[in-house]
Amino acid sequence: MFNRLFRVCFLAALIMAFTLPNSANAQKPIFKEVSVHDPSIIETSGTFYVFGSHLASAKTNDLMQWQQLTTSVSNDNPLIPNVYKELKDTFEWAQSDTLWAADVTQLADGKYYMYYNACRGDLPRSAMGVAVADNIEGPYKNKGIFLKSGMEGTSSDGTPYDATKHPNVVDPHTFFDKDGKLWMVYGSYSGGIFILEMNPKTGFPLPGQGYGKKLLGGNHSRIEGPYVLYNPDTQYYYLYLSYGGLDATGGYNIRVARSKKPDGPYYDAEGNPMLDVRGKEGTFFDDRSIEPYGVKLMGSYTFETENEKGTGYVSPGHNSAYYDQKTGRSYLILHTRFPGRGEEHEVRVHQLFMNKDGWPVAAPYRYAGETLKEVKQKDITGTYKLIQHGKDISADIKQTIIIQLNKNHTISGEMTGTWQKTGKNTADITLAGKKYNGVFLRQWDSVREKNVMTFSVLNGSGEAVWGSK
Image (cartoon, rainbow, N blue to C red):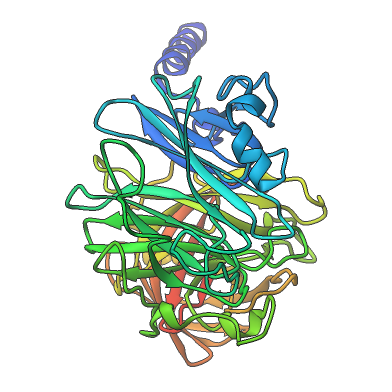
């Protein structure tokens, strides 16, 4: 009797082992890391590519496991073979031997257009052009320079070049608006962020625009890396930006503004017109003038506590973003440095969600295939690690504080307030008298190697708060 029962149980266990997914493997996502500074994303034939500075690139099928394709500017780089000859005029004008943040888009002819740029660095002496390829992985052939900056004398708009008012022609992002018009937003520090209308047949700017229309910045304020993404659900164009300096002590952080039109005007959550955001007259890198403006989604932080290790970023920024037409999901793609790891950087992807005010909030942990599902009240209550991203531009790493979300919907601990689940997964939270709204989301914590409840919320001043149970 016992032997027969044992055989039945063993056979049942064997069948289950072969027919059910391995829960440990199913729960634990696999990540493969790459380094691409200033990653600009494009999807083609089901594969995602990022292109960045120094002619670096990588690809992935799932936004988690990345494959490095190229790393540096050299004549052997397959993206632009013999690059120093191919882009000779660019390097000579910029007085540089490397390239800055690239952007690739596909036009109606099916070809891939790479917007390249080079800059001297200590001066806004830059050149921007376009190269074209039949295959997204190259080789790209140069079609020519169309913008220059940093010249002595007459600039691209016909007036004497003034670095406090005119752009540094780097950091391009080319995008189609909802009506099919092609635009390019660009700029870094110097005179600010500008936008040009482009010719969708040639990939070059339409004539007679000079540097284009100014969106924000000026007087050498530290604002760069513009990227525009339209969301059909909210019907807004979102202008993502990086404030501060990109190195580990630069205080890089990701901000966003929005507009009903691709070429602005753009506003922040408090209704401030971004066109007015610039450094004070006669200043250089005046962060105090610009830090109150724009919705700050993410800066330097650590989820580590005295009793528990946790993830953390240093100077996350120069992001791109992607909207999936099939699923309606949005993603933030960025590079970041890390606490205690110096200038080493890697690509990270975080899912984005729109809160009830139509502003994006970023998931606290990197994307691991999670979906926004209904959550239960009993799964929300408990002790949380909390990050307040604030509005400052600082090298300081935001530290974790501890709070409790109680069954009676109060919040206690190092901050007090209230919390409420207002829908299947939407969150209304009040902390220290400020109201925030966003989402509750179950996510994978790669340090603790388990799924945890999180929340990501934003207040009316444009300050993000993250919680991890």
